[in-house]
Length: 161
Image (cartoon, rainbow, N blue to C red; front, side, top):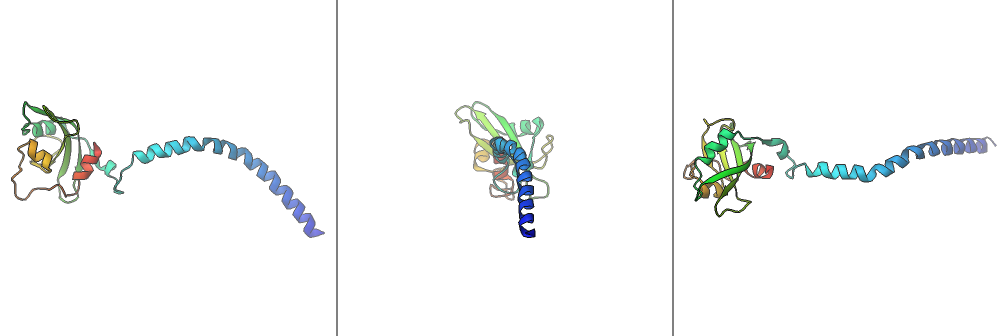
């Protein structure tokens, strides 16, 4: 008898509390698509290397972009568009600067990468790092001990654009 009474009491307790829980659960179920959409957007803002490359992206000063532009060899004059920098972990004080190169005959996706030790002004040393930067600028393409396109920060800087 006692077992039966506890079972009925337990069932009553569970039914009462399950019914009250259902009231909370329904709005959560309706919010699932919106929550999923927010998570998808947040995931898209992340990076693909697991190291937080989007968190590593830094702005580049107009003065630094002007300095890089001064060495462009694009026929008819060239300019730099969007640009972002990533501090390389392979060097003590080097930023990889990825920038869109605009000029006659160039596509919309022409991006070069340069290395500099100053992204805030014009006092930094500048080197062309990848083949695009070497082709369309005269920034130290022949330098012996310069950063290369396989160094940390090059692909990450490109990913910032």
